[in-house]
Image 1 (cartoon, rainbow, N blue to C red):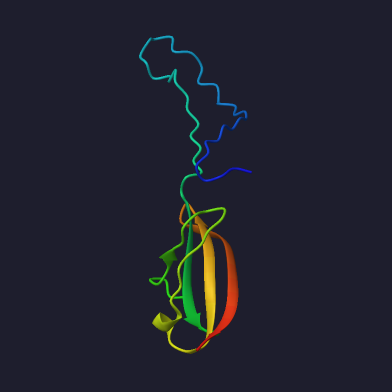
Image 2 (cartoon, rainbow, N blue to C red; image 1 turned 45 degrees about the vertical axis):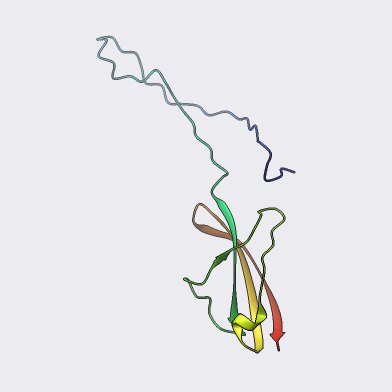
Length: 106
């Protein structure tokens, strides 16, 4: 388990294709090879919609945290009646997880 404020060390192998030799010394065969990995582009977002309504692409709000997330919700901002609270995890701009909770606001 990795917490939000911890660093991560990952390992693995990658086989780069053989670039051959550089017999002319032209420098067109790179000597440096790099693999970049990022896990920093993730966020939890939420919104409230009327029951059975579609999500509003412009209404996502950021939650605090990633593994353990939270947000403040003022029910009076959303009117009374049946609602759905939608929470999603996005990584690199793609939705990777989603959870919904049905509620009635009074």
